[in-house]
Image 1 (cartoon, rainbow, N blue to C red):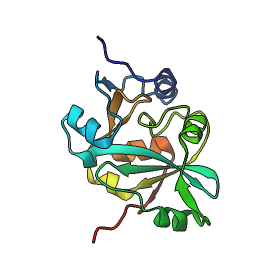
Image 2 (image 1 turned 45 degrees about the vertical axis):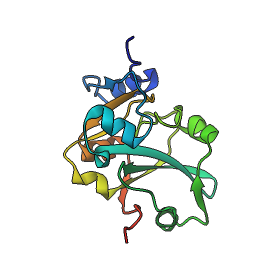
Image 3 (image 1 turned 180 degrees about the vertical axis):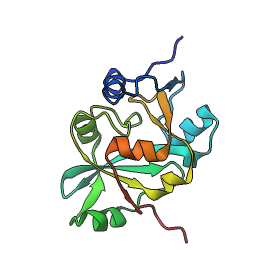
Length: 161
């Protein structure tokens, strides 16, 4: 069986950005989590770029985080000057981005959303991100990924003790 390819909306976004030559990789088993993606690709979890949607005072915001770290919602709240930041419900994620949780890419979304990218992503030459489905990923230099996502570089990962 052929693994599912990148999502058509994401493929169109790549074309619009002049990135239609970007190679995506598809896997028969899901790469829904950073651990699954890293195992399938053969890289470290920190080389996976997670695309996580939060609600800041009810407004969706996308946070790009390396796969080995967790988002500190208090730091996101401070960064945005929001009263409250929570994980967005699955329906909000799909409505905002056009993709299901586990396949949300860092750009190519249905709606324009504020994007924060944790600086930890810049520690790698290449990171891997979802290509719109839980079975497809693509590699990109972190600075290029941040630029295409229109992201603001921030420090929002949980601090380790």
